[in-house]
Amino acid sequence: MTILVFRNDDVRNTLDSSLVEITEIFIKNNIPVTHAVEPANVTPKVVDWLLKIKKKYPTLIELMQHGYDHQIKNNFKKGEFGGQRTYEEQFNDIRTGMELMDKYFGDLWFPAFNFPYAPYNLSAMKAVNECGFKVINSHFNSHWTRKFFYFVGHLLKKGYFLNHHVSWNLNYFPNTNLFEIDMNISFIKKYINEDTDSKMFNLKELIENTIKYSQYRVIGILLHHRYHNEFVKIKLLKDYIEWCKNQNFQFMSLSQIYQRFSK
Image (cartoon, rainbow, N blue to C red):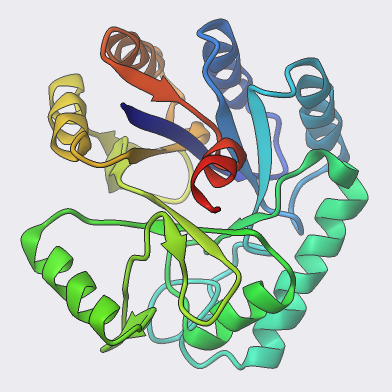
């Protein structure tokens, strides 16, 4: 049975109505959602709300760490990590973010990490590992060229090869204690800006992408709540979830997937 996991990125300084509404959609449908929190940017109001819903729906609401402050610091590829950044710089950001997550959420957050904008280097991955995270949440692409690249990377036992990420989905990233759980599908086809404007895939396209990945044990679905800022985009999420519920899918959080597959 194929498992679906939903991650919602960029939980930060504003308690957006879209954040509340999509969370309520998942709760109503009894489906877990993982909120990826920016530790340097999240405000007390958002923390209080997250704690409240996490305590009320402990198996449906999952909290994880999304970088540190979501700033562009990589001059080679758009991102917060990787590129020219040293191990020490990246470790300090990741560790400081982890300390903030502990301060805000105690033992109510799951030690999973993902890199804002995706880029990283081996120093960044080493820093995540040294901080003691259990899961690295990255990306898997099913295109045949990518799968061949992953195959070569696996033969060489590489997690980063020719300046590209090698997916180790549902396996341990080489030379670390990090279990990798990867995302596959995004609602967003094109980002227009960093605010609330984007072009999304339509329902037919989302269904086609999901069917394409249904050959795999886990499908990761990526959301950015602030872009679901219109009725039609909220409806898109509702319609997609309704379709998913009518399929032979199972819904799990990152921690539940980790518990099932990491042994």
